[in-house]
Structures are given as C-alpha cells and as structure tokens.
Image (cartoon, rainbow, N blue to C red; front, side, top):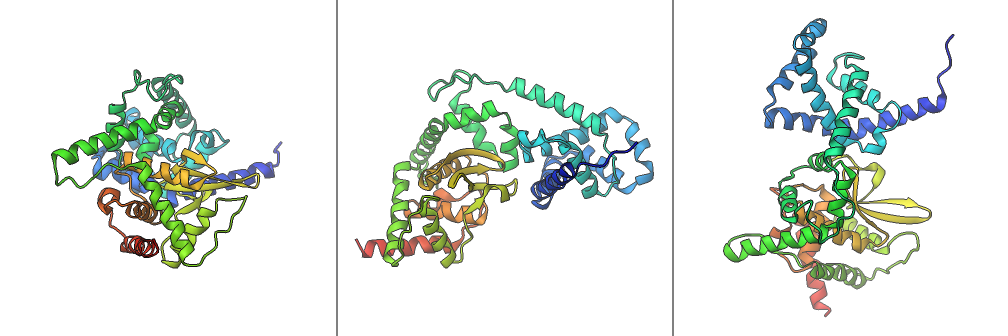
Length: 366
C-alpha cells in the first residue's frame, strides 16, 4: 500500500533545495572549494576520481570498488568540507538536507542520480562531526583575560592566515571555539594593533598603521554632517536605525552598491553587514557566511565591530558594497587607504573620491 507524500514536507524540501542551490552552487562556493582543493591544494587523487566518474559512467562501480575505502574517503572529505562550511549546523539538522545536498552534487557533476551512498555519507558525517566537536571543546568560563586554554597571540596568527569565508566557517564551525573569538575580540584586536605598531616603528616603509577604534567614530559624524549639509533630513524610525537610510542614500547617489543585505539573501561567501526584521524591529549583524559574529539594533555599533573583524581578518576579501563602506569609514576617520585594503583587492576610486568630497564639505563648514 502506498501513502501520499505530505505536501508540507514536499514544499519544505523544495524550499531547502533552493536554499542549498543558491548558497552552495549558484554562489560558486562549491566550484571555488574544488579549485582550492585541486589546483591550489594539489589533490590529484580528487581530480582523478571526479574526472573518471564523470567520463566513464558505465565503469564507475568497478573503478570505485577498487581501493574503495581510500577513494570514498577522498571524495567524502571534500564533500564534508563544503557541507559543514557552507551550511550551518542548525540547517544541517533539517530533514533530508544531506540527501538534497548529495543530489545537487550529482546534478552539478552530471554523474547520475543516487551515485553517492547516502547512508554511508550520513554515518561518516555524524562520526566526523562529533569527533570534531569533542576535540574543539573550550571551557565556557573563559573571559577576555583568561587565555590559559587558547593564547591570544596564537589566535591572532590563526586569524591572520585565513584567506576565505569558507575557511573561517570550516575552522570555527564549533560554537564554543567561535564563542571564544566573540568574547575575546577586543583583546585579539588590541594585540593585532600592537603587532602592526611594532612593525611600523621598525620598518618605516610598512604600509599598515594601527587603528584607534575611537577615531573611527569621526567617520560616522562626518557622514551625518555631510547628509545634513546636503539638506537631507534625518528621518527617525522606531523600526530601523536611520543611519542605514543615510548611508544607503549616499551610496545610491554615488553609484555604489548597497552595503547592507538581508541575512537570508546573502551568499555563503559573504562577509559584511546584514539585517533581520523581527517583531517590528530591525536587528543588524556582522555576518561571515552563515555565522553571526555580532548583533545590535544600533548600526554604528555594528559598523564598529565590522571594522574590528576586518582588521583581525585581513586576508578575507569583501564584496563591493562592504568594501566601499570599509574604505569610506577608514578614509573619513583620517587613515590612509592602505590601512583598509584587503589583500590584493583593487581600490574603488569612487569610494575614495566620495570620502574626499565629504571631508572637503565638512572642512568648509567647520
């Protein structure tokens, strides 16, 4: 006897499939991770396995059965890294998430339906995830000054080496290790500034200078004064921070991309400021992929933390809107643009020119 499929379950699966498709595949996260693993990481075995199963459909079973354990481990390790870094733990707990993910992988690689052993993937994922959580446990009683379990200097070095959002999400997927960063972010930031200052004093040609977070607030004040000088009214709202309207209006008039996105619309490679509307109130976040690093109803506080996290994660690049906001605030606060360049990112002249215009208007009207 067959039973009808629950329509609610079917709709939920369709919704989850669209979410995974957007976050993992349309955003190029899957392809980027594959290139990192193969072209950059030199995983020749993974290249050979994927090439073979894509080109030899009739001989896949015999190929994989030979040395099956090693080949499955290679494929699984790659899929696991994408699965846990692109999709947060709560989402992975949803019904059929693993099945949908594997189906989309099969579709993306054009290797036929049900090629991957679902049950084996789930068992291996569960075992590996549980081992990871146990190995990453950090005492919740840690404070900003208690660094016995995890040294601040080591954390500065670790964060400095992270190059992508996916790498960060994968390395700090455990909630307790992530909480350590959140609790100690100011200590990490201060140590990072000490290191930059030391290098600057020793090497006068060193391009970076330490950032004083109190000085960053000058940038906010200049934006508000600039908005006022243009004759724009500051429309106060109980629903959202009016500072968002001011920045968005300025960015729009200067053909810059919006630096604020809805949290549920961001790609998994996103690093910037997002928001959610709940109970007639807008909450702002510093987001890195699906991870929320900081939240507040006050946008200026979130921008401040956004600056701090970008200083301690110097190699993770920003999307256009986020990059322009980061550069604009830095230039308005009196810092050289070199202090706010992420890696080898190309500077958008429009944001630097906007900062110069705002500075000029503020000086003329002092």
